[in-house]
Length: 475
Image 1 (cartoon, rainbow, N blue to C red):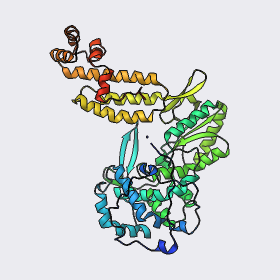
Image 2 (spheres, rainbow, N blue to C red):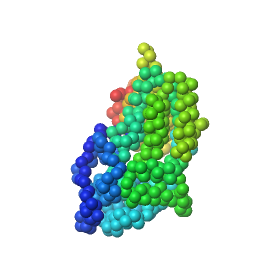
Image 3 (tube, rainbow, N blue to C red):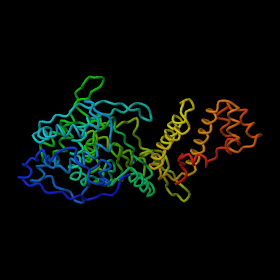
C-alpha cells in the first residue's frame, strides 16, 4: 500500500524580481536530470511535508506559479511521472515519449502556464471493476497534464497538508492506511465499540467545483494557480471518442485529486474534532467511534447535514451505525481475543476477494506452465501479504496456504493428463511404485487427488517454498 516519515525540505525564497524573471530555455533544457534517489514522500507521489504551516498571505504566496515551474521542482515531477508509468491519455503520448516532447515544447507550455493561457486536455475515461460489483470510473489525464499536476502538487501539499486534521490519513506524507487501522483499533480497545461508518455516494463524481474552489481560495493566494486548478476540474471527459463537458467531480487518476479531496473534506474533520469525536478518515471513507448505538445515530444525523453543506450525499444503503467488530476499515476488521483484547484481522470481504483472485491465477484451463502461475502468484501475494501483515490471524493464513497448495497440486495433476505420465512423475519425485500406481489411477480426479497422500508427499510445502510461492502464515 509503504510510506516513510515526514521530511523537511528547505526551499529557496522567491523574491519579487526573481518571480518576475523567467528561466532561459538553456536553464530548462529537458529531459530534467534525476539527481539521486527521491525522498520517501516523493516516491509515493506526495510532496514533502513541513513542520510548520506556511501562511496563505504574503508576497511569496502570490508567486506560487513561479515555484511550480522552477527547474528543481520540475525535475522531481518528471522523475515521479516516469516512475509511476501509467497509460497514455487522449493524445496517445506515452511516458517514454514525454522527455523528448518537453525538450521541444516546454518553453511555450511554460509561458502558457505562467500567463494563465494553458488549457488542459480532456481526460480519458477508464472503468475498472469493483470487488463488490459495479465499476469505478477513472479519468486518466494526458502524460503532460500528469507532469504539470505533479509539479503543482509538490508546491501546494507542503503548504496545505500541515493544516489538515490529525485524524485524516489518506494520501498524506508520512501517513498510511496502517496508521488509520491501528488508531481505530485503539478507539475500539478504549471502549468505543460502536462505529458510524459513512460511505459517500460517488464522491469523486459529486465534488462541487464552486464549493471546492471557495475552500482553495482561502488557502492559495496566487490567482493563476486557482485558475489552473479550475481548468483541470472542468476539463472534459472522453469516452467512446466523444468529449463530454464536466460540471462537477474531480476525476480519480490525476495526482492532484487526493489533495483536492482532503481540502474539501477537511471542514467535516474540523467539526468532528470541535465536537470531541474519535474518528479516522482515509480519503472519502470516514469512521466515527462512539460508545453506544444512540450516540452513533446522533452523529450520523449530524454528518448527513455537514456533508449536505458540501453538496455531497451519504449513501444510506452502505452507511451504518453498527458494532465496530462487524464493519471493515480499509480491508481490516476487528475481533476480541481472550482477555478482551481487540485484535486485527483481514475482513471477510477482503479474504473472499483474495480467494477469487487466487482462483483466477490458478485456474486449470489457462494453458500456462507451473512456473508462469507461480510467477503471477508471487507478484500478487507479496504485495497482499505486505499490506495485511498487521492481521493477528495466523490460523486463517495457514488455511489459505493449504488451500492454495491444494490448487497448485490439482494444476500439476491436470497437466499430467495421463496416468502413465503421472506414474513416471511421481516415481521421479521418490514415491514407491505402489503409491505412484495408486495415485495415477485417479489422474482425472484433479481436486480429490490433490489431497492424496502420494501428492502431499511428492509435493510438500517445502516444494512450493522452493518454487517461490509466498506463504501467508510466515511473517
